[in-house]
Amino acid sequence: MSVNTVINQYYAAACVNIASISYGAFCGWPSAGFLTLQSKTESPFEQGPMTNEQASWVGAILCAGGFVGSLLFSWLAERCGKKVGLLLVAIPSLLSWLLIPFATSINYLLASRFLGGVGGGASFSLVPVYVTEITEDRVRGTIGSFLVLSCNFGILIVFVLGNFLSYKAVPLILATLPVIFLIGVIFLPETPQYLMKSNKHEAAEKSLRYFRNYRRKSKEQNELFKDELEKLKVKKGGTINDSSPLEWNDFNNPIARKAFVIGIALMALNQFCGCFAMLNYTATIFKQSGSSLSPTLSAIIVGFIQLIGSYISTMLVERAGRKLLLATSAIGTGFGLFSLGLYSYLSENGYQLENFNWIPIASFSFAVCVGSMGVLTLPFLVVSEVMPPKIRNIGCMICMEVLWVFAFLVLKYLPLMTLSLGMHGTMFVFACCCLAGAIFVIAFVPETKGKSIEAIMKMLE
Picture (cartoon, rainbow, N blue to C red):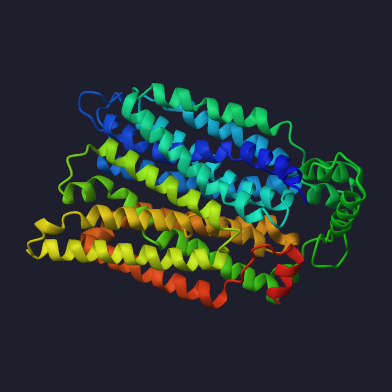
């Protein structure tokens, strides 16, 4: 097959991932926004600057919104289709940005962050499923990794804008992203799988033709197209494209149980790998290293490092494979965290480390870059691939709900952890989680690179 057959798949992925860019920017907005909100002279709040306690809730409520968004939009996608669910993502995303410049109290900001979380939860639930259902096996990994690449691109954008523009200008500019997303997605077809399950056979064939860009009726293309269309045919009581009503046995069978174990474990690795903690310590780590860089400039550097790591993942995922990238990323991230923890431990105990003040930045950069190559990018793709098609929407939703619970725990209780264990103890704990995650990936996660959904299901039997 020629490159032309995947053009529309790349275009569709680019359109739906505009929502990921918006969510990434929303996640990174507090980096510069909180500096203004906690300033005694610049805070727009009538009651005065935002306190540290309020800031912790503003950060954590994002996860509550993500929990609701995953649940609500996964249900909408099951009932109304992936395209309808994706179109509705624009509403909470747009409102979340528009509330920020007009916020005069913490309640406005809490509502904004909750709605932003709803949009993020919806995006991370629907985009991987949509992409999995429209892409060919040979490019599914590359296109699937756009999700976190786009998210990191959004983070970098907001870091740069926050460094050069005013507090109110940034959200007003970024509010255009949900609008662009809506315009792009409204012209995309529904996925062929959903249309076929809805007994809309002609629409399913038309959708598949669009995503495969089959306009020339060559004999080779006709045969390939017919084979793929035949695989989409709805079957009663089968594993692939089963349209029969959901039953308990659909979730409680060997394939589904293995898929859920893999999905939940990868969600835990994604959150407890320590990269999130690293990003919260950006300014502290740069300060420890003796760097004179400002917090906003430090954040830009970190955002760029993240983007490079996720771009490398996109380039390697169909060459090195998911399993190798995940395992290597987990081990590398753990090594970077251990190095940082060891430096912190020695520094706190009075050792003279003036000649080694480059270690925090090097460890920090290495952990973030390597983490973005695998443990931060690939879990969402792998979960959408290993989940049985009949329960894919609900299965991915459940895994995402678990992710949001983990994220809330990390966001809300990380300060208590660092207070009781110190930064070095926290880094050591996350390093151990990375090692445990690498062992799990090597032992239990199947390699899905280039394999059809049918082949993946057989591997899980």
